Image (cartoon, rainbow, N blue to C red; front, top):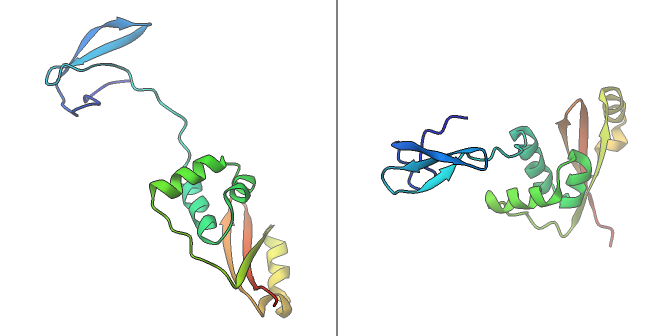
Length: 139
């Protein structure tokens, strides 16, 4: 991996400065900061970040999103904090969700009773579709 900038001051003038634990060590000429090669962490695709935030805004809990997408609920929580997402308050409605393949969603949409009395959103989820439906709490 090629280092181009200092991680502390983002200055471009860096020089090699020995080897520590079999890793190349560098020094910034501007701030004299010593550092080694940046650790490359596991990066989750932006598609899943967007889907997780959409599902959160639709009223699903962190654990439900974890079960659906296979992404840690802690990661979802961190994204919500990072992007400063505020969940709208749903006092009169509660979301329910189901995952369908293409044929199942077409059959569901053919039945008019399924379409009345509640709001719904259909979103793509990989090769399947998720139907989120809001039903009014019964008094």
